[in-house]
Image: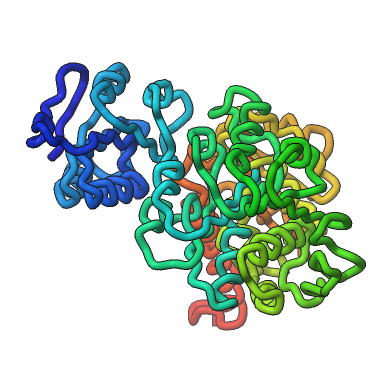
Length: 476
């Protein structure tokens, strides 16, 4: 079921030339989402060709393993070696659907009629969609909304960028699908129509994918493109870009903000549109500025589709965050180690720094074409900075003259340097402000490596204490 296709005629699979041929679909990318797409399409009796190249290989699996997966799904799998071959392969297709992992500038994106997996799958949804986008906070809000709905007795599934592909989610039994959507996915939508659509915030990001900040903002705004009477747009009134793009919407607009909006904070209490208390800050496990925004946005979305306010309160009171998002890994000799690997923008890293009093920051990676200058605003919270990855030189420039900066050549080196620079009461914070793809395959791998290095520091510290208390026989 697998073949290599450098450039030239593709060998058709059986049945493609019959008088009653099935719809022919090209799936670009063969990772988790591409495989889920292919499976659903085959079940719909489509004639599926899945294709990948070096940049869209599919979770790093070897070609033999990908071939076996394709064989099991019953799809033709093509390995592209010449970029020009994408257009030739796509020429006879009725649909071209791209996985979210297709990188910027990929040749398949220039073809006519290309849609994202989210667009293709949403057309098949049988239940309301709650869609959530934003530069930061998407995964947390998606998780909170799902938990609030489930606690309220609704069968809700979190899907999209959060892990479960929407193409797979639409085949499952659920009352609501809560979809995390990225700007890449939204840019390639035409009829995407959620019942509730939230845009959490906007900050420079993904300039390696979008040609300008305005194009990036327009892609985000497509989450509202097809909303009409009876639908709900959830907007952050404290974000000027979000508010500007919300002008002229022909649907119900639900706003949230720190001190204004339908859902807002008054004193130490979070309130719903009627003034009823959603929660007090003392009820929340996490109550930094961004945690409050996330709580308000999630509650607004969940209640718009049927959640009960008291159940939202219960979920917020139990929620202590997600892995790799300001997650405390350990405390060693009075120094706290926090994994915030998910912070892949300067704004996210800045928010993390401002949540702690004294920080040794580990930052850097692949900058995605955006300026890291906003990170400089964190200097007041920093004791020192350890710069890592491709952006290490830029990180040095951002903090030159404002605090000590060291450059590390590996995560192990970074954690060792940060430990030496830290003082009792400090937080060693991995909050890179950059993507992970220079050193790692994902922010998860980066966070796990940080945790491994911290555990080694903790092990050595523990052993040192044992050696002090129980000296070896030779020393007695």
